[in-house]
Length: 109
Figure 1 (cartoon, rainbow, N blue to C red):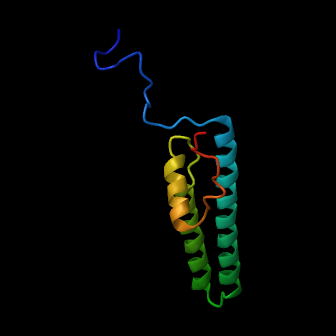
Figure 2 (cartoon, rainbow, N blue to C red):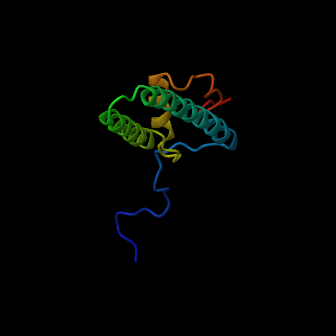
Figure 3 (cartoon, rainbow, N blue to C red):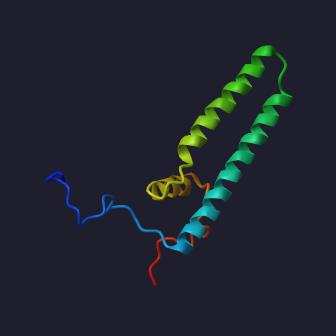
């Protein structure tokens, strides 16, 4: 038995964009490149912090930094197609991905 509020002829996520095969490939490449760049930045900073450890508390500062960055990155990089427009908007705003990298996504010919 169906609920009266459910229309069986509509897609439940009507407002989500539909991604073509080529857009998915472009999105995956741009997403992976941005994530790799951000992780490399974290590694550089962690190495610098590790080299500057003088006191035991400095090691905990490094651990705190890595935990915070991991949490932030895990929240930011969400590769669900329903979230990608938001993810790429944020990455563009932060300068972590360029419009050129996203060339072809969302364009209609």
